[in-house]
Image (cartoon, rainbow over all chains, first blue to last red; front, side):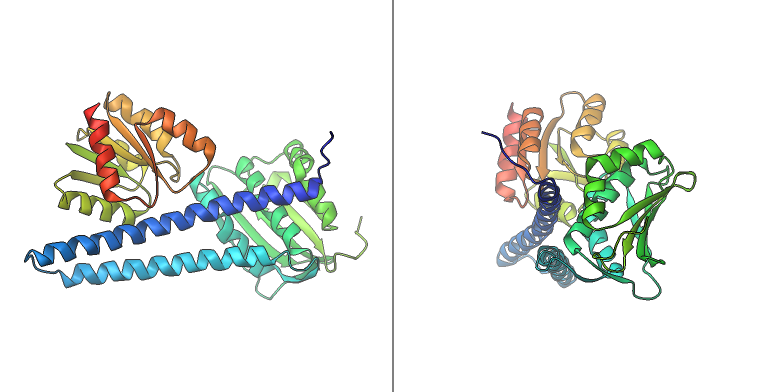
Length: 225
Length: 117
């Protein structure tokens, strides 16, 4: 029997599963903080019953910790929900500033664990294109993973969406060790597939440590050569 | 018995240390591998509880460094990350591999078991 695989679908599933694993890890961390705070409250309740005095300052700090963690988890779940709903429509107008922010949140744990930092420069004016949101998120995630492998000593990756003549672009910089050969490997390992699906293109300024994804104003537009 | 807790979630690790001290277990805590290395130069620990996934250096790499400084130190891994691969590797390397959130009594049982061997 031969198993038929759809490369674009497989890339999407890999992306979705990696993000899901990272999100579940984050939620578990948050639950662990709430669990210890609640446990401590239980401990002090027992001690109070034995006649030891309550420390209102400490109780207030615990309440504040728990509220902060609930807020943190809520944000994580909201972002997870936004990612899940990005498959609702094949094509729609996407605000690249908002999408960049979502991807920065979703990728944060992966980047931080590996010692990297992502700085998103929000565009001065809203930048949007008609595109496939999920494929674009997948491409950004793949590009961020590639960016970590070619990032300079500062270990800081800069991501900046902006308008261009064709529609819009997302520029990744800080990639001091980037070479044309590495970009070709990145394209061969899934980058090209997603660029084609998005009718997009990729440009590299190796001397300046920069890689730019260029997106048409409308995904159905003929690709500029 | 003196134990060291290493986890980048400060509110988690600080509260856990406080709860252990209420149970007469002396526990220091730090939030990075770098701090753990530093404190291990000044104090001896019988057991270390390590978060597997931390920025810059994870628990598995830190364990190797701490073992060089304190041969025979016992290790318990603690993680929110639940991959099968990590679980297998972590269980083989450490005395115990526990998933967050944890029950403090379970953790104390594992600490006692690890130190008894």
